[in-house]
Image (tube, rainbow, N blue to C red; front, side, top):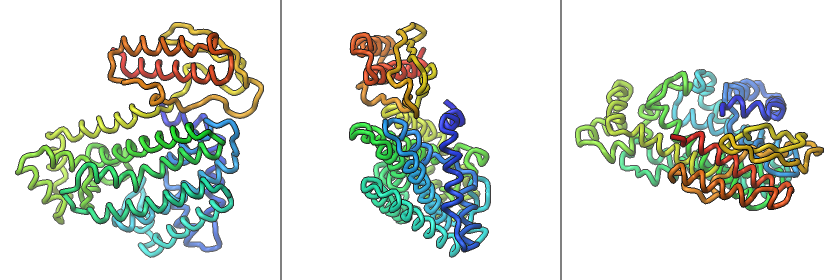
Length: 399
């Protein structure tokens, strides 16, 4: 599913978020307004707030004000980390635009980043939720640790994959994890739902960072909004480099190490990319990304519309009609349809033979069929989850 399609499903919430970002970032200090607007409205995809908003749809008691305020907090924290990162990394380009520190200098960028952090925590106090406060306090502290760990490992060609994965969890994935978790908290999800959302956010965040790592060497500026091989130039040892160092020849190792610690890294970019591809580090990274997407949860729309006002739910498996069941919440307002489908709960090995997948899901569908379980919302939700996961797998893994 295209990102634009997912955004369209929550377009009203995202529009309201944009207006709140403008209002809550405005002050009587002109530099804060200019620099804050530059980073907040510089073309980011709003992925973290989007995950928070979508996750809130899983609950039955959504507080839209808390959801929006929490989304603002998440985006302010993200923007603050970008401002600080660009100063530390001496970056000049982000989202195909000059970075704030390039335009206004390092001091201004750091101080406005501090402002966004403090404004975020003002809003957290207004939300007045102990669980949300605890989550974000832990998250911001962990992000800071991750940034320091990354700084400590600049030009460290002995960095292991295990240690690197810990760094990207702390500096990147944890904010996605917090976004999904807070979406569940703000809509009164139960403990198991919040745990599943948190797990989804973790895997999404890891895949997101690994994708950035991939694009830094194998993408283009049009895709990333940044210069190619920036990580190499900044001396950052990311997973493509780690993998190649574990599989390369001695001559290749010398070239990689020279590029990482040397002052002429930009002139060696083509050579390093060639080495990475020769060692199949691009394919290794793609597999890692797929694993994080595949083995936990997936965002997936139903094959047919499940609007909250719909009178009936309609299901089909591989074109076979499974029946139409009355929606118990047809007259209720809000969004009863779930955009989050969990594969992890279905205890299925995706690498299993396709015929076994078909058999497994038909058994599950029969077991949880509303005609057997009763025409309740819980039975319909469970049945819908099974059907959607099944159709997803057929679409992705059909021979």
